[in-house]
Length: 204
View 1 (cartoon, helix red, strand yellow):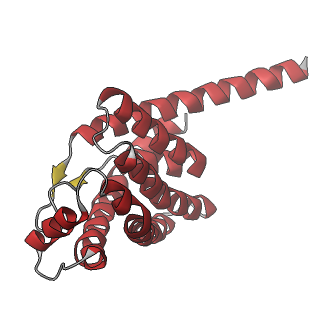
View 2 (cartoon, rainbow, N blue to C red):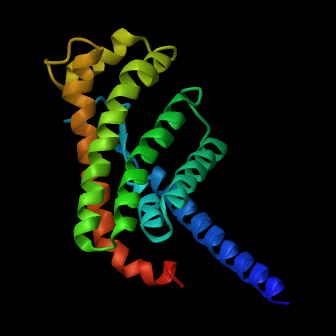
């Protein structure tokens, strides 16, 4: 009898977590529609959005695995409803870079759930995301993306932002690093402003 009650309790908890993850995933997907270029930082085909914020909130409330699921479901929904113009390259990058942000941030916060820990976690997450994005973009994502847009055109788009961009590596240094730092800071501010307000709902 006790085992039945325990299994039922676990099922209820699992259902609640799945429901919360699903809701946050849909919110993240909707936020992906609110994207826009930051032309003073990066080429116009690189779009800014805050869709990582719901994944961070979910990671803070339910752990890094929940945050990763939110990132994954968000990208799957995007491919289903928006399609892809990059053969899935952009979506893969979005997922991997998002995970590089969410995992360290939520791990650090879960170790000690304080405001200071949240700040440290988000800071480490921003740095980890930026480093991961730089390496993955340089060695993997942009070379794949060049199958859809010539590398010369990609570099030229960066040169239009700043004359310091002369090749792929300088594009990473002068455009992509500042862009990802900026994106991470904005998403972190959103999380810091909203988390305490929504966390009681997520912990029910």
